[in-house]
Amino acid sequence: MTSLRRRLLILVAAVLVLAGVGTGVVLHAADRADRANRPQSGGPAVGIGKLTLGQKNRLTFINTAAGPHRTAVASVPSTDPRAGRTASSLKCARFYAAAGTGICLQSNPGVLKQSNRALLLDAGLRTKRTFPLAGTPSRARVSPSGRFAAWTVFVSGESYSSAFFTTRTSILDTRAMRLTPSLETFSIVKDGKPYHAKDINFWGVTFASDDDTFYATLNTANTTYLVRGSLSRRTVTILVQNVECPSLSPDGTRVAFKKRILSRTNLWHEYVLDLRTLKETALAERHSVDDQATWLDNDTVAYALPTNGKVGSSDLWSVPADGTGTPRLLIAGASSPAPL
Image (cartoon, rainbow, N blue to C red):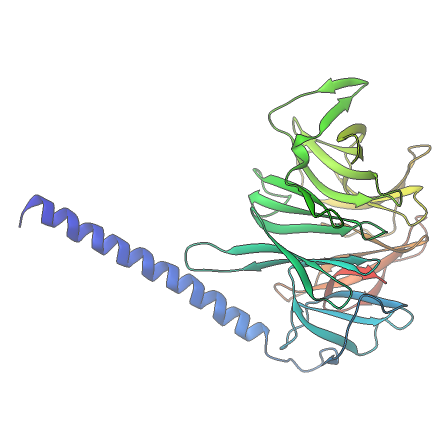
């Protein structure tokens, strides 16, 4: 056997092995998804129905309960969140909506690479535009007016607890259909001076009601900061340290956020920051919360926690925003809440 022929056979064998591994991974993922899509006894009542973003007094979310409607955008009455849920045909990894505008981040596995995309939705959950994503979906938000949408993806690494990860955060003007692919193009001000670094990462945008101001997390030199940004000036200003995944209250006076407990740990507790005084208030939840909380109203925040004993499922919990009270289960088998 000639040397060239031997090398060709080795190459063909390697390609076949890689193809087999890729097919095995996809089949394993498909089998796991198939098991998760089977209804389980004792699960919530879920039915297909008409779901629009114009409905009032509804709480929308992603249904994570096992069954055929797993990962579907669903809703329940805000006054009765444990009622039977209405599911749409739209399935998302992350979702948010405001003022008749929705954003759905999708992630579909493939043999060679997964396909990630953002769907801009109208009030009827119809897709207006599709945008390819550079990585795995992580966070999504829509401004109170519906004019702006933001999303964060992991370009490398799979979670904020990873030792090494890179994020990319984009903002879309839904009226002009003008996309800012990365917040890293914005100017940064720290201690009154321009700040430059090669290790900048942004994530977790939340919008104010003026269609200009936003807040987000900035990470640099192994430190996270809360930043206040201006869309028109394309600048962000660093405010305080150790703030991640901020969420602005409806009245615009406070930010709920997750705070890392002890340096280099993967534990976060939920806090609320008064933007005028910069006073922090620890909330009653004592579990580690790796989520961007959502304000249900000016007094209550909601967030997702993993479901005990169920891989890939989460439950929505709520807690008073003033540090009093105790956490309560809001919706079992749910994530990505958005009050309408």
